Length: 489
Image (tube, rainbow, N blue to C red; front, side):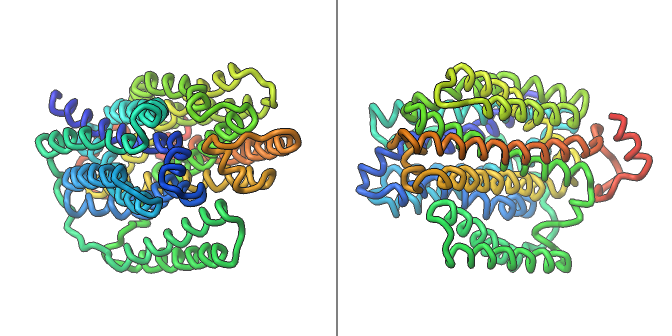
């Protein structure tokens, strides 16, 4: 039991570091832009490249964990993340910083792709929800710390220290990981090199084209990239069906609980993270708050989520994931409905209330949904399924940024929207009114997307709550009797 707690602590530490770096850069962007003598269109890629790399490589890295050892790949991720963080702090140009952020993201992808699988290796099915609840707490605490540390470190020490802070933490975490983490039995299979390369090219084209569209507007170049990526992704899926050792075992989607849970995660990220982006735009562009103050308005939601995630994880262990996760989506929908009522003079306490609703919703959805996914995965494929879950969440996050920026730039000039996002511009007069109409439209789109996530969550059925013995494969549809029983849960 003590060993399990140490392993969980190491996983939480990795989650915490990854979460910190998703929010800490935002508050430092104006200082980075000025210090490096760059323009905002270049430095904003310090955020986008992190999302792009995570989206492209997470599934592959989960598969590497299955093949070569999840703990080994997790520790390797800590090493790369720590080295990448140090290099980011040493950067002297925007190009160097973006490149080293990509290195950092590679390490973060290893951590993200293997952490859920290590928990599945360590904890029995009926205790995983609680463990995932604690990792959810780590994520929310990290996001909150990133908000606070980004403002404090940038103000008093300099923007470089938002990256340097990862170095001592990473060294300690790497030492603990090497000492306490033990590898799973490795899967006897070949690495699908051709599939990995084709998948990486397809997703790179899709992701870069989508982000370029959101950042620069439609062009023949980004339209070509999106079409190319979509075509190559179809080719990849066709080849994977014929591969004897596929990188992505498509048979996993035959399991209704797993497939519905994975897609619910995608639509939840796509819908609600776009809301978080748009609310930051509202607080800074219309209400005139600086990035640090704007982020503090959202902190109560992170606090609530941090403290309730472990409890919600225990509830999912006891009662199953479907009711808990679906109720979480309902809370997220309620938060969006509150946001739909805001105008230029709405009390900030309304925003705080909505952030608390979203915090409760997230603390219910994430641990329960993660537990459902991993409970439906074969033990030999925990890494690839964990990577698949992270991939779907990452591509949802990337898509949410596209939705948010596209909605903003339909109402205001693109560079003004970027300036609002990082707190260097404020909208006035007619621009403010137009932008308020635009963000209401974005909320309606997010509401529709979250409803899809809720339907998928409710329709997933009942996952296996007890460890299975003598049954090596679980990539199967539930029998009619199973489905009937699940419908009553």
